[in-house]
Amino acid sequence: MNESRNKPLSWAVVGGGFAGIRTAMLLAQRGEQVTLIEASDGLGGLASPWSIDHVEWDRFYHVILLSDRYLRSVLKDLQLDDEIAWVQTKTGFLASGKLHSLSSSIDFLFFPVLNGLQKFRLGLTIFAGSKIRRWKPLEQILVEDWLRKWSGDSTFEKIWRPLLQSKLGDAYQRTNASFIWAYIQRMYSARRSGLKREMFGYVPGGYRRIFDALGPHLDRLGVDVQTGTSIQAVSRNKDGGFQLGTESKGVKSEVVFDRVVLTTPSSHIASVTTDWTDDERSRLTGTEYLGVICTSLLLDRPLAGYYVTNLLDPGIPFTGIIEMGSILPMEKLDGNYLVYLPRYLMSDDLGFDDSDADIHSRAIQTLKRIYPGFQAEWVRAIRTARAKAVMALPTLDYSNCRMPVTTSIPGLYCLNSSRIVEGTLNVNEVIRMVDEEFNPGIWSPHLALCHDERAS
Image (cartoon, rainbow, N blue to C red; front, top):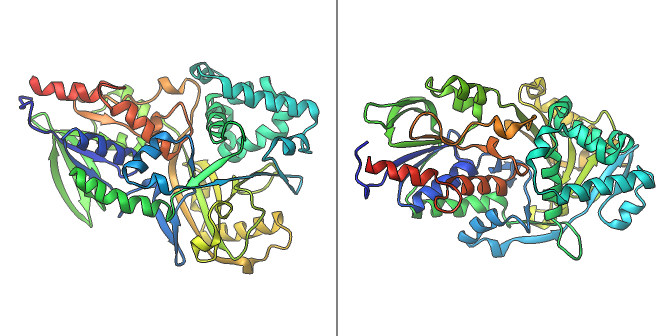
């Protein structure tokens, strides 16, 4: 293309989750002309808010860690970082029908599920994982093999297998060891040195408050936000730019941009153009996703007070119990105690077809099973959210199987959460991924190369 070096490029960023939002922010800060396109009616993706009865909070559960420096940098730009409320949290385990705290060294010492040797090996596993810095070799090892090596067979069967199965189902048998390493790293970073206590935080008002601030911020940067607009097709035009086929409220149209960044799930990226190479299409369609069915309940009273309760007992149809009310005072939610019951499963699992009524019935029966005296009347409101593409399954050698950011199609880029390999999926890691891939002159040359194309 023969472009003036001083003329801003027009960029389409497809996908209004945090990957798309952060990409649009960085491009706009460089003086580019940016349009952020989102299929749903609002920004946020997995971090979007919603209403449960008359109470508005996050659709899926989120917390902020003291160490979430990428997210906190964005919140600082929005003048929200100083408003974060920090809370010391507790962790619980359900084993043999009983709840046990595992929130301190004393709790660990008296944890009845494991004997002395098993506790030593579990502690050794977590300590070893926290000290590992070279994560790539772990991609060549199955998570079960690594955990059995460090923790031993008995500890694996009692602790690790039920936790892996609750999170990954049978897919844990194909998952690499960097998966558990990333979780250990994040949980260790949640603890303050010295007290060694988990400190989690939230912005008063939740992600609704964050997006209320992000909208004007994007506007000040000059980003044109278009929600309720889906991308049906992307094709090169004769001028070297891109023609996007869009649909909004049933109306189809075509728009033209110089550059396009796709941040949507890999299956959608694979479908928008026929111009991928065989290798690229294989990488995109070969990405397996975990999804989640997440039930939110508003209760009239607290449960056990653990932020997360890990479920070791078999036959429970949820991954864990998240008591957001252990962090968020009831007065912040009109006197309600917020609980999440997530169930993670592969994106093609038939469980996604279960009715809300069936899921809600299982949720209440599960709470009755775990908490003595629990009554259905405690539930003031209940609602279930579904997302089929939440986290890419990290199989063996996963980082070498990902779709590259820079594609075979000049000017078309792929930057979605499937590229995360050094952390768990959360908002901080998504922002970190974008910053490291798209911040020229510091981490990545991608945008610098794009700008150099103008001289051609």
